[in-house]
Length: 105
Image 1 (cartoon, one colour):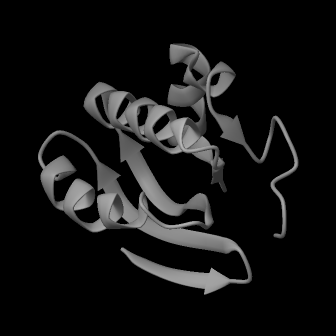
Image 2 (tube, rainbow, N blue to C red; image 1 turned 90 degrees about the vertical axis):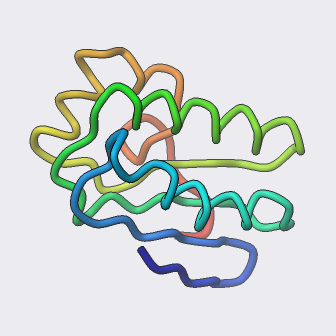
Image 3 (cartoon, rainbow, N blue to C red; image 1 turned 90 degrees about the horizontal axis):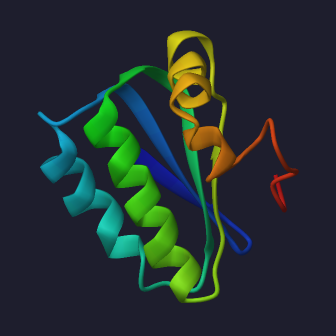
Protein backbone atom coordinates (compact mmCIF):
# COMPACT_ATOMS: atom_id res chain seq x y z
CA UNK A 1 0.00 0.00 0.00
CA UNK A 2 0.97 3.55 -0.55
CA UNK A 3 -0.79 6.88 -0.69
CA UNK A 4 -0.64 10.25 -2.33
CA UNK A 5 -2.36 13.56 -1.70
CA UNK A 6 -3.54 15.78 -4.52
CA UNK A 7 -5.38 18.87 -3.40
CA UNK A 8 -8.19 17.74 -1.11
CA UNK A 9 -8.08 14.10 -2.29
CA UNK A 10 -6.14 11.38 -0.50
CA UNK A 11 -5.66 8.28 -2.66
CA UNK A 12 -4.68 5.00 -1.02
CA UNK A 13 -3.40 2.44 -3.53
CA UNK A 14 -3.89 -1.19 -2.65
CA UNK A 15 -2.22 -4.22 -4.23
CA UNK A 16 -2.68 -7.98 -4.13
CA UNK A 17 -5.29 -9.46 -1.83
CA UNK A 18 -7.61 -7.84 0.68
CA UNK A 19 -8.72 -10.59 3.01
CA UNK A 20 -8.96 -11.63 6.62
CA UNK A 21 -5.25 -12.47 6.75
CA UNK A 22 -4.12 -8.90 6.11
CA UNK A 23 -6.97 -6.71 7.39
CA UNK A 24 -5.13 -5.84 10.60
CA UNK A 25 -2.21 -4.48 8.59
CA UNK A 26 -4.53 -2.64 6.21
CA UNK A 27 -6.50 -1.12 9.07
CA UNK A 28 -3.32 0.01 10.79
CA UNK A 29 -2.29 1.86 7.64
CA UNK A 30 -5.65 3.21 6.53
CA UNK A 31 -7.29 4.16 9.82
CA UNK A 32 -4.71 6.89 10.40
CA UNK A 33 -6.26 8.80 7.51
CA UNK A 34 -9.80 8.78 8.91
CA UNK A 35 -9.20 11.81 11.12
CA UNK A 36 -8.00 14.00 8.24
CA UNK A 37 -9.99 16.47 6.23
CA UNK A 38 -9.35 14.90 2.84
CA UNK A 39 -11.72 13.09 0.57
CA UNK A 40 -10.53 9.48 0.37
CA UNK A 41 -10.21 7.27 -2.70
CA UNK A 42 -9.23 3.63 -2.49
CA UNK A 43 -7.51 2.65 -5.74
CA UNK A 44 -7.90 -1.07 -6.49
CA UNK A 45 -6.00 -1.08 -9.78
CA UNK A 46 -3.59 -3.77 -8.49
CA UNK A 47 -6.04 -5.73 -6.31
CA UNK A 48 -6.81 -9.18 -7.65
CA UNK A 49 -8.78 -10.68 -4.75
CA UNK A 50 -11.08 -9.58 -1.93
CA UNK A 51 -13.04 -11.80 0.46
CA UNK A 52 -16.16 -11.13 2.55
CA UNK A 53 -14.07 -9.82 5.45
CA UNK A 54 -12.50 -7.30 3.07
CA UNK A 55 -15.90 -6.22 1.78
CA UNK A 56 -17.17 -5.82 5.33
CA UNK A 57 -14.13 -3.72 6.18
CA UNK A 58 -14.80 -1.39 3.23
CA UNK A 59 -18.39 -0.89 4.38
CA UNK A 60 -17.13 -0.08 7.88
CA UNK A 61 -14.62 2.43 6.45
CA UNK A 62 -17.36 4.07 4.42
CA UNK A 63 -19.62 4.48 7.47
CA UNK A 64 -16.76 5.88 9.56
CA UNK A 65 -15.73 8.40 6.92
CA UNK A 66 -19.28 9.50 6.05
CA UNK A 67 -20.05 10.15 9.72
CA UNK A 68 -17.49 12.93 9.59
CA UNK A 69 -19.10 14.45 6.49
CA UNK A 70 -16.38 13.27 4.14
CA UNK A 71 -16.41 11.06 1.07
CA UNK A 72 -15.00 7.59 0.30
CA UNK A 73 -14.86 6.16 -3.20
CA UNK A 74 -13.42 3.02 -4.73
CA UNK A 75 -11.90 3.19 -8.21
CA UNK A 76 -10.34 0.82 -10.71
CA UNK A 77 -12.40 -2.28 -10.02
CA UNK A 78 -11.59 -4.98 -12.55
CA UNK A 79 -12.11 -8.66 -13.23
CA UNK A 80 -12.87 -10.93 -10.30
CA UNK A 81 -12.83 -8.09 -7.76
CA UNK A 82 -15.43 -6.13 -9.72
CA UNK A 83 -17.53 -9.28 -10.05
CA UNK A 84 -17.38 -9.91 -6.30
CA UNK A 85 -18.57 -6.34 -5.67
CA UNK A 86 -21.49 -6.87 -8.09
CA UNK A 87 -22.55 -10.34 -6.92
CA UNK A 88 -22.40 -9.36 -3.24
CA UNK A 89 -24.30 -6.12 -3.86
CA UNK A 90 -21.59 -4.08 -2.13
CA UNK A 91 -21.30 -1.88 -5.22
CA UNK A 92 -24.80 -0.58 -4.42
CA UNK A 93 -23.65 0.66 -1.00
CA UNK A 94 -20.25 2.11 -1.88
CA UNK A 95 -19.36 4.83 -4.33
CA UNK A 96 -17.31 3.37 -7.16
CA UNK A 97 -15.96 4.88 -10.35
CA UNK A 98 -18.61 2.84 -12.15
CA UNK A 99 -21.55 4.31 -10.20
CA UNK A 100 -20.67 7.97 -9.70
CA UNK A 101 -18.04 10.47 -10.74
CA UNK A 102 -15.35 10.74 -8.13
CA UNK A 103 -14.42 14.39 -7.45
CA UNK A 104 -11.01 15.79 -8.35
CA UNK A 105 -9.64 12.76 -10.16
